[in-house]
Length: 261
Picture 1: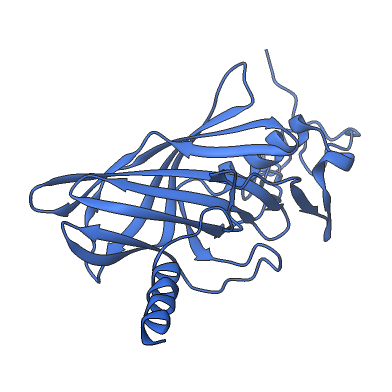
Picture 2: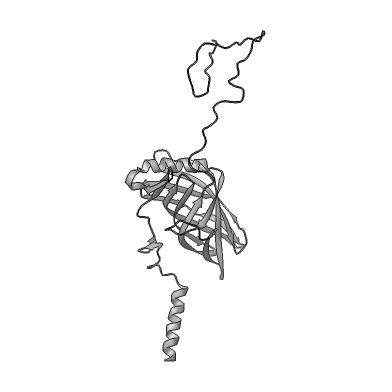
């Protein structure tokens, strides 16, 4: 009887200490879960993209959103994939530094460059993740990231791996894969399933649902087309205007002055 209880206890302990990849909601057939559809929100309304939006529209909207936030910091949080509400103010991963268990945290990322790839629905991004591990902030290189819109329901962001100095005996490579399933153009949110893995003196990783909160939305203010005092006519020597005082066409607040040849 005691042997049976002990065996059941060990089985329960083993099942709670290991990741069940077959039943993990973030995995499908051993791979990261791919969204069945991408939800895009615009004009305060949300709908599946494949129902009414082309991949070109999504690509153009994403490029506009990311360009607006170039050289800005975006917040990162662990979220629930259904409600898309942050459950933690960061993303955490169980790792090992040598043989010591630890946790790696990412709470923000700075977009330092956005470049459109000519002839393909792709964007080259340079990202700088704010990484900490057990309260320490290691020095990390920039992440060269590729975002591509293969179709209206297949949007992937992945990097070639960036390095972090987490130990004194070498660098650790961190590689990220992000399958986007949510784009909010009104409030600047991008959500999706992530997989982050480490290799080197520090190893480990994890998966989950991540929400990125950008500083700006996809609708910037109209640029100022006139400088201060541009529309004021310049007076001549006797105070009279040297500009043509005849009727002018409406040009949205910008006056077209004649150019003397």
